[in-house]
Image (cartoon, rainbow, N blue to C red; front, side, top):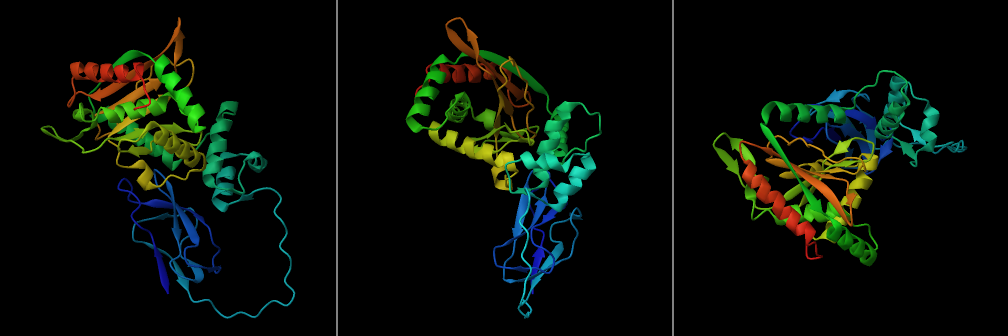
Length: 354
């Protein structure tokens, strides 16, 4: 008899939500079949069966569970008489709506017919959250329930504002050369390469010269300097804000490929804990054409966060504002200016050697 117990999925939560059973109670399952999804404050994780057998569910959908808790068993498959005249299973008309997704549709007062326009075969709770975000623009005035993920974002923002004495400085950068490089790489690689990819590469490149910008504050006298840059980058495809991490110094084409993967994961809530942890600096992206300045929050434990706004035409060149929010306990204004000037120099002489 195999036991399905809740693993420790992240260090921020003491309990999770059993989001959805992927196999029916009493159904036969095989080794490595997905059984259940658990929602943490950051991700949705699947647990799989470790053996062949029959699933016995011990916890209902929507219940909370804690690390180590027994939530199911997988036992031997009982012998069964074959059905001499099985009824055909009718084809589903439209996507299948999971029980948690249907419950959220009811809770938010959304018409189930809305899911017909989603490009998915199975509608999960995260898909409904995406619909709800889109529907908020209709101004219906109905109350909305914040997702676990959005509540986690709120906790981080609150903690950042409460605990970090932040400063902020912005610099204007001529990004014409960087955009030219990005277009050249796009044509050559047949993959979209943009200014964010070049900026992330430039930030990682400055790790050795500006290690304090990647440091972790231990106490009021001590910081930890990491061996390698690990750059988080904001991704928001309408399903919630995520900050997956690009580790080490990757070349621009590899960064572009990694960001494309992150965008796909963001659309369907497919991030795992390893995607979202371990960062030591963050680049926040503000793509809308009218944004000329953005002040990012600093993740607790990190030294700074960098904001990139949308490029703007200025005469014969194109410029963008790059801002830096920094923890004044670790970094002073003069160092910030030097860091931003170094970024500016890299991007204004932008080459494919990034």
